[in-house]
Image (tube, rainbow, N blue to C red; front, top):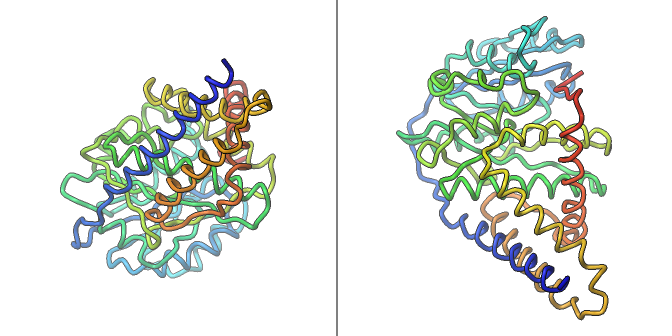
Length: 357
């Protein structure tokens, strides 16, 4: 009985991996070569050191019509002084001392930045992010069509070789693997605010974050949940379009970050919640049942399972522009199968979830 359940979980995982990875065949780079005005909007809370690294990469962007809007949310560090000493020709600084009641701090800061923007498109990223190239905005621009309202990009984590960093890189890839492939299937359900573009008029017409302005997190995926469709959403993948981000260096920091991310999962549509549960549940069964199968010759099955997974992920990586070390696949997938459900459960009970203290 246990063996049959295990084999069923193996088959489900293989089918999901093959099905989603083959969707990347659909990706085409065509769009428009006509430059559109873009406004990069960043909400920052005491991010002086990160802004010192990020601003030069934004100034180096080759897009011909760009403005940079930095919204300083209740900052007590040197962020303001640093920004005021920069070249102000295409940078706007908005300083917020207090968030109105009923608003999440980050959503309010982003909303004020969007309201001050003059670009046709709003491009979102975070202070701890770094575009992979000076062509980042041009690659986003290349994917815009007459029907485009939302562009979903890829933002992988950079690592330093520690086990935590390797796991974060895999978890970030798997998240992107799912939301990008589903968008290619014309059923977008989320994006990440580290590399995301929304047409400004569409954001305002959609009432922005009004339906969930009080929730911590979800400025990216909940907006996509509410407003994205197969007709108005496109993905942007290839190395020049990537925005790298720094992974947390301590497990406690990562758990807090992931708790915030997963806390908005209950606001997803029922179908999206069930799909995530189906994937996570079958993956958990694949690994937790292994100790109960010591009398079976399961090694060839596990090796075949890992081989198919590695091939599927490698194909997706070839389209997405960056990959990870597959020697770690068995371990990080085991960690993902066990660790993510625990954090998801934790997110249901933790009440004091904050963007930044």
